[in-house]
Length: 288
Image 1 (cartoon, rainbow, N blue to C red):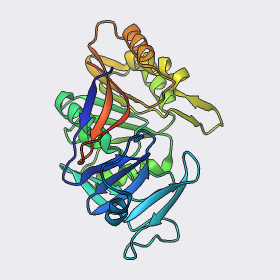
Image 2: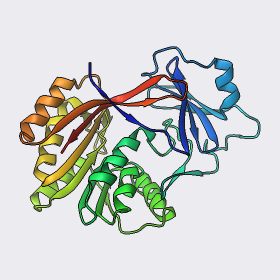
Image 3: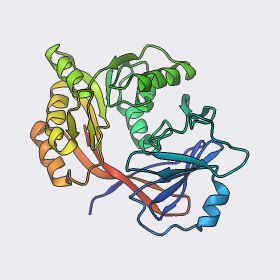
């Protein structure tokens, strides 16, 4: 059985309970119910208790889309299905949140352990690359150390969201890269660039801008190879993967192939609910 690496709650985030393929989370003063297939067990709190606590619930239409439903009269859903944006903080970093049709709200709190890893390991004058960077939690943590940060995502609106987080956090200087993560990383290899820290959060599957199909089990070796060519001698690599089709033994063999002299850790990224349940978020690979 794989070991677990736990992220921790903080003042503005709490995983209250999980079960019946759902999770109950608090984001500042807002509490939501969202689907999660890893919550296959029985929750501690009753369904009625969940409904009493939460303001919003995401009801799935398909695997990736659905609709937010208001559970309280004082918290209506606006026409564009987004409430007025609210904020939470982590240390000195500000995250702007909203309800999206993809069930995400703007930050992946399970990444907290990686933020702390980056904060501890990244040198103040180092270079940091965030691939599949989303709204930039890791980018903000790295940038707070005055590192040279490159934030790469292929969606323009997400880049804009990340920029707002940076500005509201009182930061500046992040390099914004609107590009396919693998393509940009390959270009950086050709340019001879090196990074002291790299984090990547690739999707399990998807369809690119040119309708090309993405499956992590096929792209993983290429991602690890390009990371090995970009990483400095004393640098670290963090990879989060979520596909059941990408097995631990495949991850380990691939990473060992390209990093034969590095320390490699592969654990289950996890969070413990306030009620004592354990929710897993996929495989976390760290190379250092």
